[in-house]
Image (cartoon, rainbow, N blue to C red; front, side):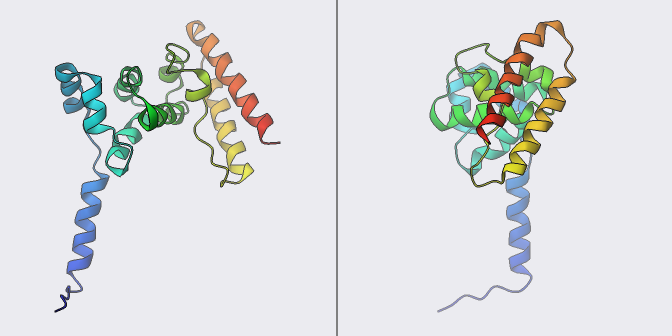
Length: 168
């Protein structure tokens, strides 16, 4: 026996699925869980390595201060793919919130400049795309004038230079 879906059922199901997966998570329940049960529990519940965790990594990448600060706390205990995804999300946030991310550069062993200044650049992407990303990072870093962030800014610029050299 086969089941047939009406022509209206499929679009409605897709719309419902999209609404569920695209919803931006709120920081409030995440922070409450962090206070109650600690960072390991937050990583387990909210920061999976698969699609279920992506909305939270996207929030970090947006550069919102509360998410960037949460990522720094979580990075202290994260390992494997979760640590890599947190670091990459922080690197993506650098262009949106350079001051927030620079404050974290080299602040702990899990937040080195080489991991949070340059986002993941796939070998499958064209060199032009990589150069565009590096230019965006440089432009973003050029807006930072706070004396307290100059060492981190210099460290990130050194990573940009290394990345650019590796493209040749």
